[in-house]
Amino acid sequence: MSVSTQNLPPQFEVIDQPLDTQMTISMGPQHPSTHGVLRLELVLDGEMIVKATPDIGYLHTGMEKLFEYKKYQQGIVITDRMDYLNPLGNNLAYVMAVEKLLGLEIPERAQVIRVLMCELQRIASHLVWLGTHALDLGAMTVFFYCFREREKILNLIEACSGGRLTPSYFRIGGIMMDLPGGFERRVKQFTDNFPPALAEFNTLLTGNTIFQSRTKGVGYISPEDAIDWGISGPSLRGSGIGLDIRRANPYTGYETYDFDVPVEQDGDVWARYMVRMREMTESLKIVRQAAARLKPGPVKADAPKVVLPEREAMKTHMDALIHHFLIVAEGFSVPKGEVYHAIEASKGELGVYVKSDGGAKPNRVHFRAPSFVNLSALPIMVEGEMIADVVAVIGSIDIVLGEIDR
Amino acid sequence: MAEENKQGAQTDAASDATGKSTTAATTMGTETPAASGTPSNAVNAEQITALLRAAQPDSIVEVIQAFGEVTLIVPREHIVEICDYLKHTPKLEFNFLADLCGADRGVEEEPRFEVNYHLFSTKHFHRLRLKVLLNEDDPLVPTVTGIWKTANWHERETFDLFGVVFEGHPDLRRILLPDEWQGHALRKDFPLRGYEPYSIN
Image 1 (cartoon, rainbow over the protein chains, first blue to last red):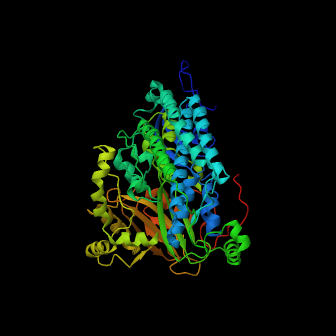
Image 2 (tube, each protein chain N blue to C red):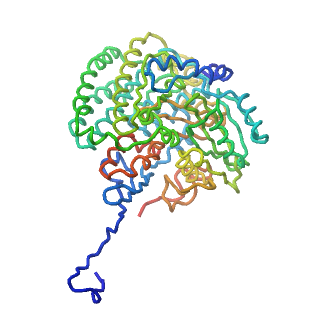
Image 3 (spheres, one colour):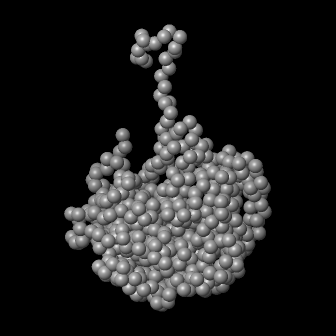
């Protein structure tokens, strides 16, 4: 230290003060509460946050570029890796956008299975959110309980698609293959056993005064700001706006299911927590209804040039073999044009923009990732809060860095 | 599916949505806003072009109706005032910018770049796409961050990956790729694997 002490009275001690009044710290990218590799640049005044700047891109792998080099059906496996907690939702958004370009009619059974699987996946995604959110706030037990329940859903997904985290179950024109035997029974077993588990989570957290004081009144965002910043999904419904794409622009037959859209008015972390907790019950209602609607029937559209033929037909019929060969080797051409298809994913509005130039590969694919947009509003929620509350707010908007960086 | 959407586009999406809103209010409690719409998510094209042309005569270059969606190609000079008009006009109220993304039409194409604005209304549940076409040697477009704050990151992403410059943007810098990255990765002439292996030191 080279501070001149010559002119100072001897009773004064010279202290170097790097912590003037404000301090800039870097939170992440290896911080456990940032759910991946998010870096936040925080300017602090004492413990209060003056300014927060998210820094993203650590997981950027150029998926949108990759789509342009893959055939339409090969793109499905890329979507699995975006929001890896809700892969079936990503599959659905992408295949529905391509189906819109192709003008395909999807059979009833395939649509019911899509709804059934997507709602199971939504519950699984919310369970990971709940477990990690509670873990960030110091409640370790909930994490294990949530992952125990999520495991049962992953087993169901594995049973029908063969994959647990990357199922790629939905295909352009339907689904990969029909549900395995006894699947309805397994779904029923899950839907019967899940409400007690949910009650357990509520006992652990909802009535917990420590959890309440960590979340109530923290990370507020007004309904006007929420819309202006493009927040969607449960985070928007926590601010008192009952917007749900399943209701606003129904797809896959959601208009025929009976479910409520939970809305909370407070706009804080607690409100967003309550919305997601209630949403799991609603998703369970949809799962029960969808399971009751499963009737035998085809699960693939009648479009031989787009949908792969059955294995047996491919071995015995000449034309099926030709179609199989052409789809695999050359792909199928999609009419020229562009579509934007939005679905209600577990995090919010997941929109897919697909632009076709008439060939077998898309000209441009863009994902409107809900986490990306929700994260951009994080500074509004955390500025003026304490530094310890940042982890609560990040948990409450339920981000997945895989789809933010793409 | 495309058939359904085309038929849906003919009906007035806004009136259908309000017609259904009473049932939604009963299922969701009285204080929550209505959240029920129709599968037809496209806005009425005739109505919107008439309104826009009345407000600003040279505001629309082309109207495209395809796949149950409405696209308006607009000149970049008017993009801000058109967005402002669409956001604040009763019956339209596009208060939610769902998405903003760029696209490269091809190296030989002129105009080469396009910027797509996907608008959504949280009151009427209809959607609309605005499209701005840009030349390669002059990829400039005014920012819409003054109208929807959510445009901030979308425009940064489009700048990062396509090199489209948004004039008046408060913080226009790369968002996904490192600051010192050379080139714009989603351009068609940018190789899939890049020019050379990249490492962060």
